[in-house]
Amino acid sequence: MIIKLFHGSNVAIETIDLSKSLADKDFGRGFYLTDIESQAMAMAQRRVRIMGQGEPIITVFEFNDDQLLNESLNIRVFPDDVSAEWAEFVNANRNASRTGFTHPFDVVVGPVANDGVAFQLERYNEGAIDIETLARELAYRKLNRQYFFGTVKAVELLKKIE
Image 1: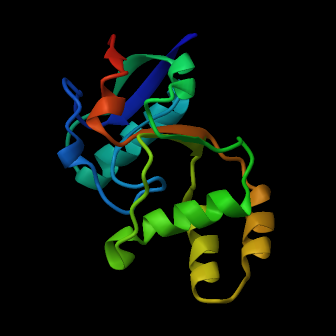
Image 2: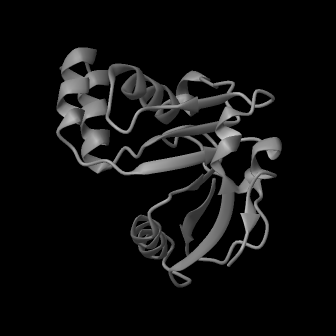
């Protein structure tokens, strides 16, 4: 089924350039979108605040989510609720520039780790809580879904429409 995915930024996205992607994000260095337009707008507004320039802009793409079953791609889809496995994956990616962690996935779909999640991950990394406690703590947070496209092959599945 064709779905709309939204990318919020302080600039219009004409073409996706993975080299401009930042490290240490939830699912690693790649291009992030959401199927929730208001979430994309919140990210665009946040980006404007952080950069101190531009205006909130949402770029819209079409994506055939049947591609999530494409066996020529390495795809990881996490459930919409949090789990210890998701928390460990996010933690590893958020520390990748320090640890050298990389993953093999072209596309990853799963919850967004918000600032409250970052605090809990920090507690976990400091040894203040174990992985089961981390997963329990994160389960109480309302998390939105995000789509990560980390390779050129994956990005080619997106069709810009707005």
